[in-house]
Image 1 (cartoon, helix red, strand yellow):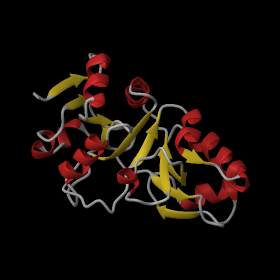
Image 2: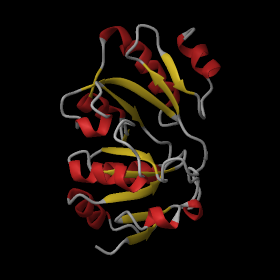
Image 3: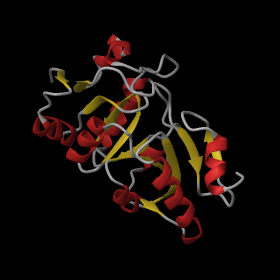
Length: 211
């Protein structure tokens, strides 16, 4: 299949939807960095992401969502963590906070490296939200780069070799933040920051207490 490049203001969403439905993968901009994604219903598509990145299958993808209501389609919200989750999503979503929750059985094992959890986030970029929404509201995603190489913050920073390995590329210029999301794990008794990115630990602690 010939690779398709769309400018952000000229996307054929039906073409995009059909290609992802048929095991294709897409590079698209988010608020943090450029991501590469596949349909959550396509095991082949998800596998293609790992192959394109030259990444082992021990590193899970996260699920970018278009709306918060999609959380409960793929994740279990423990009652004792629901209030914390609601505080975090109200304050930081859409935005650069990835939240780790226990996954539901419909999340493919390959997407989460055989683990029992899944990371979820809503990007604070309308273009990304529109793309995700058009393919069902949930898009397994990771950064659009070969493992170990520069994480692209703009279309111009995308590696040519990596671009050749995908089916669709959305040229959305430069990502607003240019830094990865912060990752917080809510599956532990006390929440844990797994990666400090755009949102600082101290900012989160002011909202939910010491972590």
